Image (cartoon, rainbow, N blue to C red; front, side):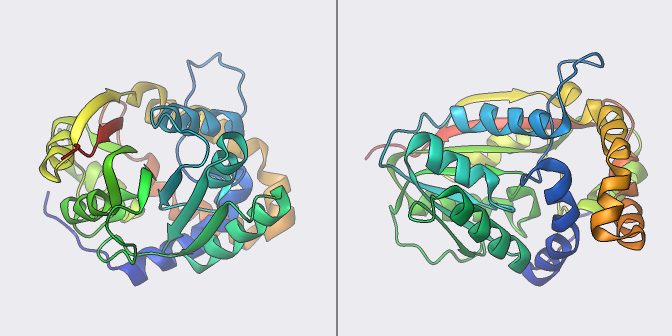
Length: 276
């Protein structure tokens, strides 16, 4: 499978178009869900929050620390970090919709003094070297034009000893490449690394990898549960956004569901910038 290239404008438009309904379905978080099995009664919004907790807990945040939420979505994760851990969070995204919605969410939660949002391109971050104590990247690096270069920028803006936690899709089987290509095109993924390749990319940027896992069966493997939950919300979503908008959203996401079970994994990687 050859690499594809999606520039910042394409990625920004991609999320401007899809984030409003995704925001509504997943309560301000656009990333994946985590269910323990088909009988798990947890709601979609709470299953999405499980992923936030699994990734964020590996950062070991302490009050007063500075955090970069790299690819912040509509802001719910950053708001929770500010509220629950008393950290100063800067969220960046390529989506104008997400910047506005995240700012509104921080203000409504009373943490606008701790959670700030703005435009940010992984290829050229505006922050000085060593600005942050921790970096969170929830399903955002996979949209970078050059994942290795993006990781190097995140490494640069972390202080020595600072922590990185990321989650992203991984390739588990390329037995049916056309299905994988459709999935990648739908999500605007330039490449789809395996778990080992993700670890190589993180180490190649200079990080020491401290923890990692592949939990795809409980994430992408639970896509049927997502569909059932989302269909149960169909009338409410159509009432808010209109039937045509909901139909367009569903049509644009069809390619996401094309891969067979076991083809798509979900990796969580935690790493640290070494001390001098």
